[in-house]
Image (tube, rainbow, N blue to C red):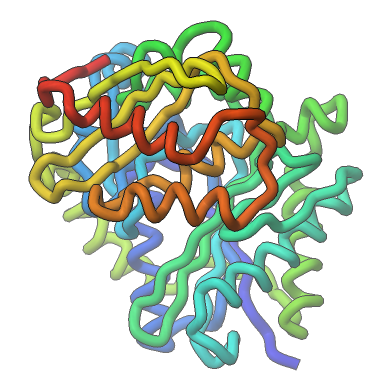
Length: 357
């Protein structure tokens, strides 16, 4: 039987956690360490994707007021908020551990195992493509992975007592998304373990369940371990670069280059409002938010549509929306996919003025 390592690096500032990401991934790629499961937690942190600009993605005034650290990940993706109300777990694996480099196949396999671990706590957790784990249609864990040569870092978070409102205020989003109604709607789309169980779960039991689930999935046995001398050296070198304003400001583009534009339009099926974050340099829709007075069932279809439109080249808008609705059963009464296209195009026809709303 193969023996893998499990470590717990505890509660740390974002810079330290990101530096450890780099150190462990480099060490696994160099085959200096065995395949490893790491548990981690963050002090309050707003984490940018590697290619993002803080001014464009975050409410920096709010972060300063709340003492929330701003940091840049070594991986891509969107800005996210972390604090100690989430338990993080990470797998550092070699490609031969997986038998494939297909990230969708890998994600499904790992997420199914993680869902089994969460379910053992007393809830019905299930994998939802592409990379979420849900309980009764509500997100309880988000995941993602990235290869560095033959080494994979696959990361997941588990919501224990997460404050959705704080997450929304950290991000640069339209003011309407911070209304009481919008915040309550966002809360309905996520699940916290404390709420589901009626108590805060014991962190040691959570970790034990995750360890056992991955042991079963990969046919391995985990042994407790510590960071090696090699990892410490790599960590210290990474921390010198990452715990520095130049790293956080590696990409520094003004909010004016990525304005938030808004529009509303009345259709036979109801009133649609939209806010669009639009990257003028690349002609790319970065994010879309739909609100208004209309009927959609299932309700989560709008959140799924918003996710499908992230980082979308403008010239693919119509095709993406049409294919989204063609691929699933959504009851919208007389509202049509073309109506969503029309209101987004209306927003983008407005003067592209900078907005920090």
